[in-house]
Length: 258
Image 1 (cartoon, rainbow, N blue to C red):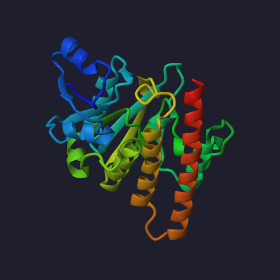
Image 2: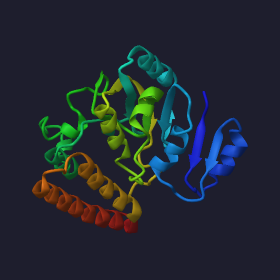
Image 3: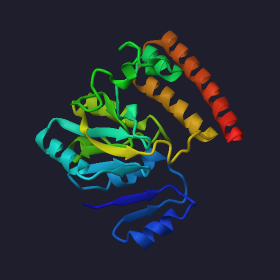
Image 4: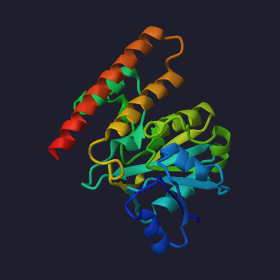
């Protein structure tokens, strides 16, 4: 196994720590924050390994998880990507570990909070792929970019991450492209990885992150859904703009209060 760390111009001593404590790690230190997609693509384009794992720095892989998922890929040759159950620091399930491609209604329900309520119907909770339990195994539309184990042959067919996304939504885009090329995306809830959600971006998004998140939503919709639907697209873009205004305001208030 080869381990790569791509540092997006951090200023907290990470580069020095990796060089000092993990000499076997292959470190790439960038002089600017290239974003999630571009940083990962540096390794994806050069890798010759049969399987590649994209792993966020705010995760902790539990013993046996990687071995189990590698065996699944070796058994299921039709699967191009696999993810697992993500558990937050408080022990709760990170619902972003398995997702469906969002419909406008499901996206509105999810981001308004209605789709996250226990009594929400399947059509409102659709984004969270409620038909598959968190401990189950099955095909899903998408897994989370915090942990994505990918087959190299599928990667060569699909291509690397879309660098038009600086941060957020690039994982959903990639999963969609895997499906479009006939590769299955699998979720396996029998093994878990700890995800300190927000450990990299912070509890409340900064302005640049907020803009990137909503710009990513608009880019994803434009790429895969907007064609031939000008009125629907206009409504979706207006909704995204309104949500961004609310999110930026909330983050600003929370940061001032913190």
